[in-house]
Length: 137
Image (spheres, rainbow, N blue to C red):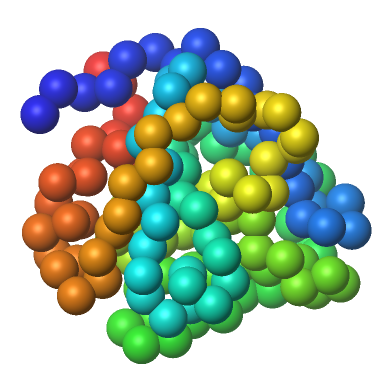
């Protein structure tokens, strides 16, 4: 699978109360995933997976709390004040960050490709998307 190219977009976003703010880079029309697992379905998370090198926490590190469940591999990070999870470190892509597209600043990402991610087929789905969290060479 081909590696992703240099990211031309800089996107900003954060939590509801504004204490947590981040910046990430993205391709112009990135692949966004809608996972059907229990936590993603219940929270309405839309996934934009980026390499760790493309993510910067601008403020709010002390305001983040962590939640882990099941295998404990995913680091679900949420604002301790408003409860919003605007990004996290996913189990499927531990070398990247998973950004909630719904937590990006209004109008930051007007175009993206939406694709279902079936949790029941996690291994195959993860393997097909492994390139998303790898930085280009």
